[in-house]
Image (cartoon, rainbow, N blue to C red; front, top):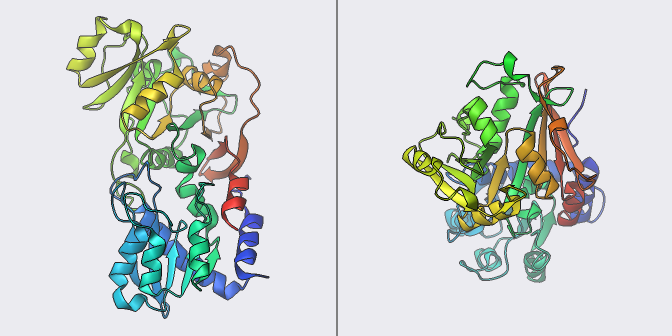
Length: 402
């Protein structure tokens, strides 16, 4: 049986570096427990914080949490000053736990290091350093120069996972793209058309895997499929199976599909949605039908007769969409893979052999791509999830945990 890779070596090295020698098991377990509380705050947010990374913080004194804070988005207070304000005078001599290194620069808000120093905090435990090389370590350096004890790496893997879209795209130089595929053991996305019920979704994986997908959707701004998937499955592209989960953003993602020539006029299972069409579709008979149904058409330059994936991402970024989940079949997935625009690939594998149907063999023009690395895997009842990242997760973790 596959088991999730936990990167224990990297985490152990991080703790040893922070402690200046071998790990103190009791100390580390206390730090992990309070960092877990900070992570929970960072996840329990009403909406996604992009383009800012989500951050959580707690202030602990005499073993008790006396201040809590989470960052809620651009222009809003950072997690550290929120937690410190709640702690008040009790913060003097206390320990601050924060999932990301406190900033030491002035942007829309003052530097968090100033708030930490003014509050009289004695010790700071950081889940990970700032991933931006231009500022990484600046906050840690200032705190240590003022005599504070700083430990780095508590639950570093979870802290890095929380902000991975921000890291993988180098502060959202372009929108983050997570490709989700669900296939059979023989690489099929769906059985032959004659074996399917028309206009009904076909699920290869079980409910646990589908619920996991819905949880992942809540962390993206847009769920995007191809026109063929809309025709065949009429998907809602929402996070309804995660409704009631309070450890993730509560706002639903937008739904969208790619239809170069606006040939599909059957609508989408959402009140409003985006349609990414080619420039050649302007004036098409499908324009009125899409708009009447609540769709908004985004015209994109074309490449080889289809919407150019790179142009689509440019348009998405102009709309303020920072994180996208790509779903559906092999055609759309293949276009983004060929363009080198997939940052993470979440592969759900079902224990079934279809023997025919929709598969990767329908896609041509692939060149060998060895740019992905294995990040981890986990079982979801009978199904298996395998995560591959374009940027090497373990190497980044090592960099930000020391």
